[in-house]
Image (cartoon, rainbow, N blue to C red):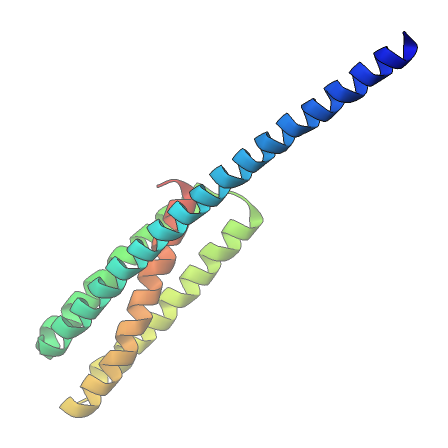
Length: 152
């Protein structure tokens, strides 16, 4: 009787472990599928953002200097307002550090815009404009990331 009971117990444990193993496989399969979907979303978002930035760069090259400087100044003013809103959010220390970095990034962009404004030569202006565009795009992306993290 004891032997039969132990055999039944061992058999039920084996069957239970098989079910748990199947469950683990299902969980791993679902996790892999979810990860694949997330990678797909990120890839699509980066492709869209890349196309947007390329289009902006193309448009910026054909925009007059005065109009470009005006648009860049307006963009910097808007991002400064967004950064100020993020400052009011408070939050954890690392988030505050990110906001300080955004302030520094914005200050750097403002200095770069001032330098760009002082350039008289058109070829030199357009060459510097490309670098300034990258500064603006990275600032924009950093502000958007912080806003997303803050839930705005």
